[in-house]
Amino acid sequence: MGSAAAHRGDTPQAVRHDRANHLWLERIVRSQRDGLSCLPFHLGLDERSYAELIRTHFPELAGQTSASLGSLAHECSELREDLLEMRRDEWEELRVLLLDGRRGDDPEELWMASIVAAACLGGDHLWRDLGLESRETLRVLLMHNFPRLAERNVKNMRWKKFFYKQLCEQDGGYVCRSPSCEQCPSHHDCFGAEI
Ligand code: SF4
Image 1 (spheres, protein in one colour):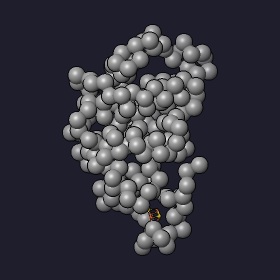
Image 2 (cartoon, protein in one colour):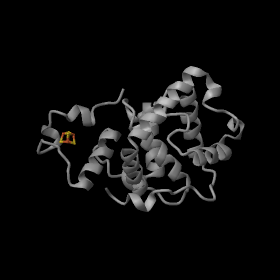
Image 3 (cartoon, helix red, strand yellow):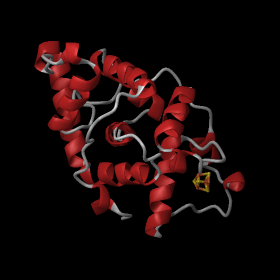
């Protein structure tokens, strides 16, 4: 689906420090360590990208491993890595969707796309699965990194629903049964408040 191959294997080169992303990443890493997100230890990144992210933003965490957080946190992270692996194709489609809408002037958008795509595989609202403070924080993060995608969510749809709808529409297989969102019995699932 889409242009997956165009982005597969991308890694940030000559990473520039972005203060906004630094603050969001700080929160995402902290929440993961505190068990407050759905992300695995590596946040959905491959080992090399994860190491680069830590080296760039949080060098004080360079020696930290999943195992060093304790056996429960380690087991939890391993399980999440396994689940991510099982849904790797879906993760890749979401990641490519995000990257197709990226701002395009910051290599850290690649990291953020991988992390957001991994969080989309969790079972809660996206902002919670990322470990962010609020849906508004997520909106600003998405507008900052992927404006050409986020701007298309003009009806303030729930973000996961919005992303999957884009994928289905791209694929020509979108299965909304209702002629319009306003008449749809699933309206609350797609547009309801995320609390
Ligand atoms: S509200 Fe109904 S019609 Fe609209 S996107 Fe959701 S499922 Fe589809």
